[in-house]
Length: 262
Image (cartoon, rainbow, N blue to C red; front, side):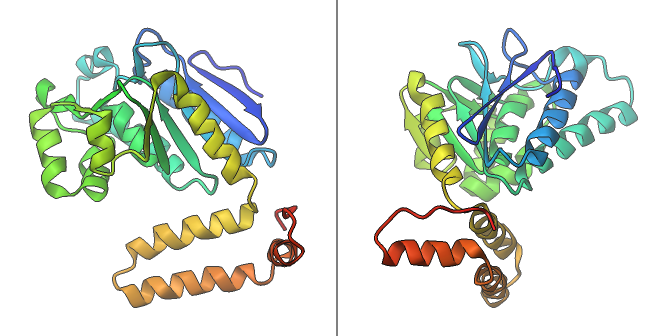
């Protein structure tokens, strides 16, 4: 496993915990994004990892956004585009991951931090966390997917309110509008995220991937009928797996299945 300066990896029970550790507030500079990119490649290629939890180190922030010093140092349109495309590539890799990725949001989740969290498949928030897109206060807009993923998750009106005011919302409000899956006490965020990851990791990986594909590709289909064809194709693929036979047999025999991801 590679050594990183701003990212830490721990693997236990087929779950990888990937921690952003860039004090004081885990801001995304170029190095941190590049290390996150490389760490994701490691975990996606590791057959022992079936789910990934992304967390932030320290007590102040999950990720407080992009490094403002790097933004201030941009001198050309080309430099800005390079920075934006790096974020798009890394967050797109999370969104397209065949392994579920869970954001463990224990504290402030702002700007690029929220953009990364929205690329994850699940979001667990601490009860004192604040989530927002404050870029408008810098004279810019979200540039790593916030203007696209946020309205898809919470609707156009609420997304515009958050983006155009820059005001953060509470974890409870984020749960109410569907931005996070669950709100728990701050000291329970990482455990809750890991428990969810372990539960999913106990299922057959082929079925998990098929479910993720059916939902994501089905939502992109122009009609319900075409989405149903996506579901049909994924289901039929599963009927040819050993895991399906094991799952059905275990149910009939009233025992826990032992999936082999085959």
